[in-house]
Structure formats: structure tokens, C-alpha cells
Length: 434
Figure (tube, rainbow, N blue to C red):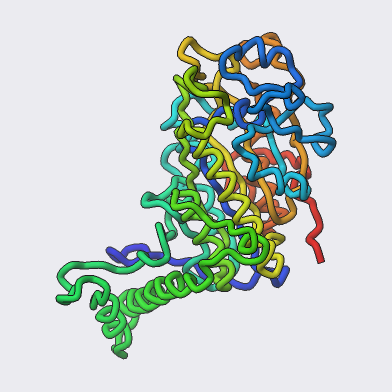
């Protein structure tokens, strides 16, 4: 609440016109993910020329660590493949629910981690404005609930979520509480009395108008949201096919975040937007594919194992939501990064800061297949002869999700993404299953 120290300003509104709660989950690959390593251009000889030591073998190479063949759904005559460590995404792809945008960037961005992470988060080349997810919440009126937005699975507040409205940061449902050692009894903080004391204070009827009353009301709302997050833990076990296959979420930032999102959505919490991180060690200046491992699919190398783990977390979430009343139709997950890497490998078996990278999305109205892509890695066709050029502007992905999936009026695009001229690629036009 503006003007009152320590009092959060919450957002309230009216029900979604569709009658079904829609959720947009943005996952950030912080560090500059190499899109050519995630979805390599296996049909391009230039790819193998540029990356003699760190390439992923073609699907038909017969080697143990070859790329996964995306098949006819790709519609690109075999130009793109998929990193074998992302095998968890195969099911989503084959179900026709995974969209891959292999040449996506903030077209007016730079190659500084700090600048681009801020600009990607604010939706404009501007360091001081609110994050675009926060601006979305400020300018739309949907469920009457303080948990319309959340940062899940990690400790810090994401740039996308920063701003006027208070968005809670929840690392895990069991630890989302108010803690103060002065209010712990001899039994420790399991029976922390601070939460109960706040409930007691807030419950007293005081004949006060104005700010004090609003602070007390917000205090009750905050406490109720804490209880709601904690109560959602009853939905901890993945549902449907995910449970039958024995899949579960990892204890990584991504795994915790997706688990929390699934719990809240299954519990009926009207979560509209959530910000998560997928941390693999994306800043691969050296040893992207070390010379002392058997190949790119060797999971004794931590980077490969974390890729594999993250893809399994996405698969677990996809099947969990699909097995919970087909909630996957109401959720879009968008995964992106601040920039890609150089097309040409460096002298340390790595890649340096670049431009275009791979973003991907699944769920909701996502149309499976490839977004606009490049057709060659010939240096003459690259940006500045060494970077993947932009075929898809990331703000067009965000805008289309917000307009088509979240039912945001198209007239709000330039409010949420200042100055952006929205181009509709029609990548999110799939009709929900019955």
C-alpha cells in the first residue's frame, strides 16, 4: 500500500471472462543460454564448420550422443535437432504441445548480462521502470486475490516481477512463513508465534478509518495467502501419468518452482503470472563440451546432467498438469534467456556472448512446431558475421501469450511492453482439448 511503510499494495479485480483461470509461467535461463546447443542446426554444414569440437552429431550419425530427430513436425527438412540431454521434452514435442523459437532475441538489446537481464525483465531498454509481469497485474483486473503473481522456487525477486505491486517470493511451500526468533518458543520456530500474534492483532475491531484499517486488512490478506501456499502442499505428489511413471520434481530452483506452481494451480489458487529460474551454468565461455568426456550426452559432466534434470522437471510439470483435469490447457510455460552465444566456438571449447538464442513454450494454446527460424549459418547471413540474427522478437511471444492466453486487451501491449509494435506470429492459437 503506497505511503505506508511495510504495507504491501495488493491488486484486486474481477473474474476472467473465459470462466477458467489462466496462468503464464515465465522461466529465465539466466546467463545467456546457447540456443545452438539446445536445438542445433544439424542440417547445416556451416554448424559443423563453426563448431568442430562442441557440435552435436546429426541424428543419423549412428553415434551414442547424436541429436534427437524432431521429425516431420519441425517442417524444416531436418534443419533442427534437439540436444539429447533434453530428451524429457520429447514427449511434449511429439504431443504437438512444444513450440521452439530458435532465433529469438531482444532486437535492441546488447551483450551485457546485467543490462539485458534488466531490459528483458522490464520489457524495454529501460532500467528504472517496473517489470512487465508487474505492469500486467497493475493494468488488468482479474481474480480478487493477493497471489495473482509470485516468484517461485528461488530466494530473490525477478526483474519481471519487480514494481508497484507486492509479489511474494516463495522458495518452498513448507518454508513460506513469517519468522522472527523473538517469537519462537523453546520448541524452536515450528510453532512460531509471530503469525498467530498478527492474526490476533488483525482480528480486533478498531474504529479507525483510512490507512490503519487498510493496513490491517492487508495484514489479514497476507496471512491468508501464507496459509493458502502452505495448504497447497497437499497437492505435492505429481498427478496422472507423471505419478504412474514415478516422475518427480528435482530440488533445483526450477524443480521447486514448477512443483509450487503445480501445487497452487491444483489447489485452485488464482495464480496468473509466475517467474522462475532454470540455472544450469549457461555462461559457457569455456568447456561447453570438455575433451575428457565421452560426448555431449555424457551426464557425468554436471552441465549435461542439469540439462537432463531440467527437461525432466518440465516433463513432470506437463504430465502433472495434464493429469489434473487437463489443467495444461490453462497454463503456458515460456522459457527464455537474455541473449545467445557466438555461432563460432572460441579457443576454450566454449562460446561467448551473442544475440539470438532459442526460446521455447508449451501448454495452453501453444501450437507445436518451429517459430520463424534462420535457414543458414553462412557468416554472410549472420548478425555481424558471428551472431544468430533475430527471427522472432521475444516481446512478440510475451505479447501474444498475454493477449491470446491471458485475454489481455491488445490495446495494453504498449503499456505492458512500452514502445513495442506487436507482430502476431500466431504461435498461440491452439484450441483447448475437450
